[in-house]
Image 1 (cartoon, protein in one colour):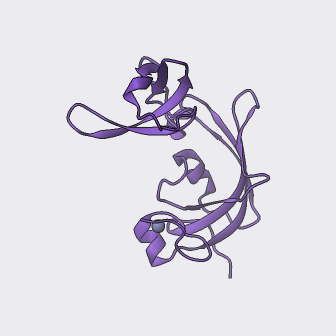
Image 2 (cartoon, rainbow, N blue to C red; image 1 turned 135 degrees about the horizontal axis):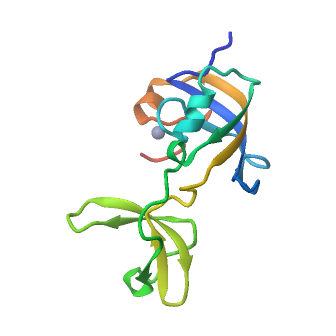
Length: 165
Ligand code: ZN
């Protein structure tokens, strides 16, 4: 029995992601394939849409505009935060996400985009915001999600629950 990719399926893919210049941004090659829950926003909307209706063995080339990817780049660009505002043991590195708290207590994600002696540079844009994304994808698995996976809105590994929420 084979099933096409549709909402509520756990989909496993091998993928390569390049930018407009052809530079490799991310790939599953040499590591584990990626599994995601279709229809749950686990992956960028443009790629999710391209994969709908596909089957195991299908190869998909998708060009995803920023608006259907990680969004358009907005705002003033990277802002410095004094290192002194971070705990001494904070393990800060470029590309990581930090959770910040706004004036009225709402929390939001910032990306660390640079570091120097005094400052941590942060931006609210995803590092791939503004990029046109060029995906090469091979579908290697499609199965129905379990009730627990649907409840959590993400896939679990073959041995059940691998994380702690
Ligand atoms: Zn879970």
